[in-house]
Length: 396
Ligand code: ADP
Image (cartoon, rainbow, N blue to C red):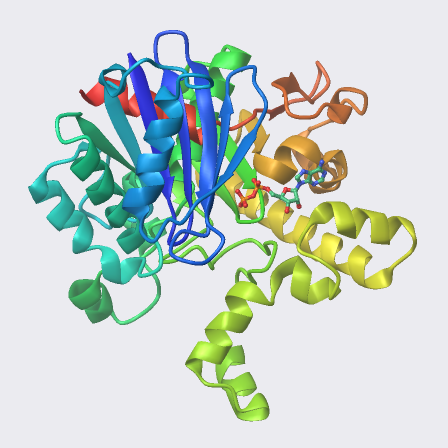
């Protein structure tokens, strides 16, 4: 069957049409600048060139309409009629404690998602708008919601509770939720398959290192701890996010710099991380170029990033009481051999040795450790759209 996978942001919408039998991507692309001037559709059929179409998209409904029109377009479309879209899988960021797995979309289910909006005020409302728009245009097509948080709902209480007054958990469900769950789930399972490990008897640490970055400890196929928290701000130093800091820094800076809470949150989310540390870029390619030229700020930013990631891996070896495999994924994890080398260099005490030649690999499944390494290290490309497609098929 054909599954349309939709990932809706506040002003953008990414899509892929996947044949779930062959797992072929029939077409993919995105709508940009929804609701603002200069909206355009990017559409790429399998094996074909990217097409760009500028057209007003005041709301997500027009955006999805354009995607559907492109899919059935006589010249470059990949299906004859919309009847060939058999299901839609939607990415939803936050499922709170209500969703420990993907769920078929019903009115009741959407009400439950809406109740999680407080926890992800920027993302969940946009996801819901996309779902409603699809429902209007394809009222008879079954749809499934796949949550970023769901995979982490298996974390034990000791991992998800913060050292805060318990009443805030009771009143508002303030706790660790974790994100990138679809990716951590997919990559941990694929890693086990690739290495011939029994997933039900395995200890895997997944490093999803992109612009947003998180690390998860996966025991027997289940998340038992993860570095992001109530929001995606916690944990690793990221492209522009600070990750863990001493919370008292907020008071200190608010007094010194006369910043209110909105200023502070904006600084932590958008002006920090390797971007803030380096003053150069949030993109590691720029940092690497600058570091090669001896730029101290770029060298510092990379060192802080790598050290923090290594510390998280070390703490998850403790949480798992051992580790069989460490998997690297996402933009940086799949492409940046220096980041992998420098993180793994901290973990020699585990008996890990990296195969320098293998570590040059980019973007394809690769065993990066030497045959005698006590812990396997792998590059395992993530594919959140395919994961959403599989979940959708499993549920309908
Ligand atoms: P997100 O989905 O969180 O936006 P991605 O997983 O797409 O992020 O990762 C984007 C990041 O990956 C870029 O900011 C860049 O730092 C890094 N990246 C991508 N390609 C390369 C590369 N060839 N070499 C080094 N870093 C890369």
